[in-house]
Image (cartoon, rainbow, N blue to C red; front, top):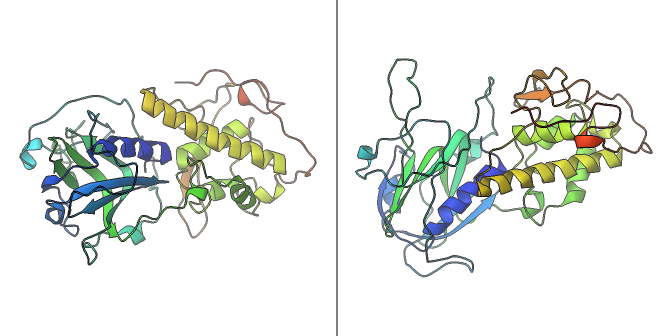
Amino acid sequence: MPEGPLVRKFHRLVSPFVGQQVVKTGGSSKKLQPASLQSLWLQDTQVHGKKLFLRFDLDEEMGPPGSSPTPEPPQKEVQKEGAADPKQVGEPSGQKTLDGSSQSAELIPQGEDDSEYLERDAPAGDAGRWLRVSFGLFGSIWVNDFSRAKKANKRGDWRDPSPRLVLHFSGGGFLAFYNCQLSWSSSPVVTPTCDILSEKFHRGQALEALGQAQPVCYTLLDQRYFSGLGNIIKNEALYRAGIHPLSLGSVLSASRREVLVDHVVEFSTAWLQGKFQGRPQHTQVYQKEQCPAGHQVMKEAFGPEDGLQRLTWWCPQCQPQLSEEPEQCQFSEGAGGAPHGTLPLGEPDV
């Protein structure tokens, strides 16, 4: 599913519509009933980790400070998926601006347990309606345009996927939501101390969590401590820190845990900045056959016995598995981000 940096890009795409009224709805969602948003006003939007929250009200009175009633020209977000025909919702295609981003499918079903995010009808009462958007593996938001099928399906049909929700606004633009679960909430669920892209991210809490006697690759995907962190960030941060995915957090020195958190934040921030600036995402080990140092990359699914198995890429030479490491052992990096004792990292193999 889209990770924190991409969901924040979605947030930026939606923000120009704050202060506008929904004048027409569409989409394939059954339980949400898109028509229930007809005539509502989008008052605010917030993001936390991998979740996007949209507030709708009956009147046009502006919501919390920071909401902007003056929309800017929106840009389109593009993902590797198909699309809905504009004729399905009765509107022509709008402007087309490629973001250049994409998500690649992994061979084993991935993602968080979204059972708590199943669609529900709007809660009683008219004020403070928050629509929670939880994206699937290829979840995306398109602005003023619809996605198109890139290839035929198994039946040989070039069928464009249907958006779950389409919202047309009074300003003339529209949003199309794909591959996502939608539910109503009385308030947004926001805990900035565990959001890896929040200024209030609590490093101490994250470091303490990493010290658990379990593989660090499990802990990194725990949204209670690293909200917004997904499989790409996990793989890249572990490689840059020179830590094997199955290394127990309890045998890592405090300094190595610090380095790992540093790489989590640095890679996530750089990814987000690249999204905003239109730069493509570069990875060094995720879905690679060789690491930048020229070593063969391994791939295997790791995860708790009672949890999700996530495909993991790592370099056995740059990321040796440790059985024991004294606390006083200080970790430092060599050229290009590789731990001392390994070859310096070169440019990403992209």
